[in-house]
Length: 319
Image 1 (cartoon, rainbow, N blue to C red):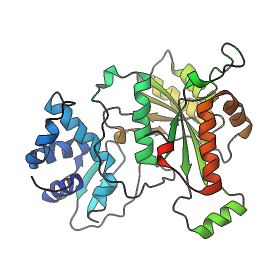
Image 2 (cartoon, rainbow, N blue to C red):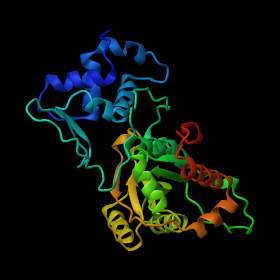
Image 3 (cartoon, helix red, strand yellow):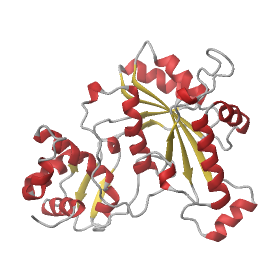
């Protein structure tokens, strides 16, 4: 066994082929071929019925350890757009570590250590909408630094009768703590100057967007995300170019963003259309949802705790 960590194996592969650009899948195939003894035990995992299943798992892990890979050498480069993401080693040029994944601010998660994800190996065609929730949460955590919670519609009171809460709340909500790594002096200025140190996000998830559901899905996202700083409609596929064009038109009009989710490798998912950011949340709408749904009340309680203490307990959030 090589005794190298997964990021180190990736580094060795890139270093042996300077200037060659590798996609995550090519890296996965390359390091398994280069260090076969390191993957003997992994291959014996009963979760992997075939060698392809194991390759897919390694492929998924590459995106999750991107930061750890980049920390190994200033000569490792990554290009996030256009998708898919590519990595390469350039011995003559240092990387500027610029991120082009999105034109929005990204909260970097520090000290992410390599751990193997224990998600079941599921083919994308067999995924239900509920199966997509943990996949989306993984993407939002690793790529955008968000703290997420699932909102279960079954935990709503329905105090207004049948359909009284239709399109009231989204599938996933998230908090982005903008000030996690700010200096204490800056935090003090923001608090006393009524500045923004937290941003709230909302996500509506659909398996596919097509001609028959595009408008109802989009306006459901509009309705249940009106309270948030940023609202997104998420899907694993868009059926036609005409549907995508309509999405672009609706997004421009109403400000809801679109995420194209890659179930087999969440870190290769893409923010297709960035949301139009609202400077303030709608507290009146938040109060309405909070009184109806216990999960949402828990979310706002966690946000309130962060406002008051600046502390986040990871066990309080979905992973």
